[in-house]
Length: 160
Image (tube, rainbow, N blue to C red; front, side):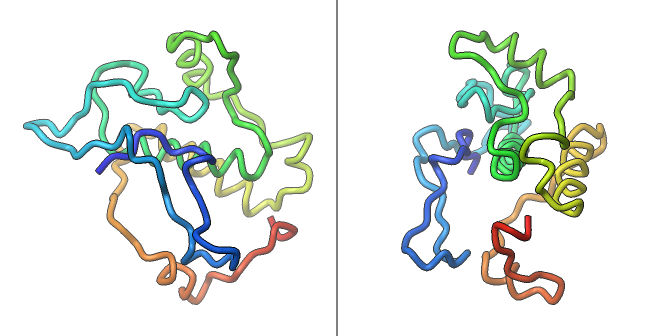
């Protein structure tokens, strides 16, 4: 299933515990099951600040568009604003030009308080998504399984 509209308002906690197990994705109004010979979706469904370039190009897209949106969501959580800002009347073509330029900043403003590790992860994510041979492996993973990995620790907002 491709969600097609991942953004901050569609990610919620189910309780006040701040536990990763209580995070849920909501609003599956644009969600669609991949079907067909090539497994591509054609209908452009999106929120402008979080849309993947392939959705705007109208040449077909798959679940990788959700990976892009998660990258934009991570950037927004770290910086406090979206990487490819737009105005309310921008056309898909104008948004695509900004995204296609690949210009975004990891310095100044809120980025001065973000760890080098978080900045590195953000830069690596964007680099991987722009690599022609990158094919994300998309499979469900329980949040609790991720949190239990040896190298993971619970981060507070000050750690970022």
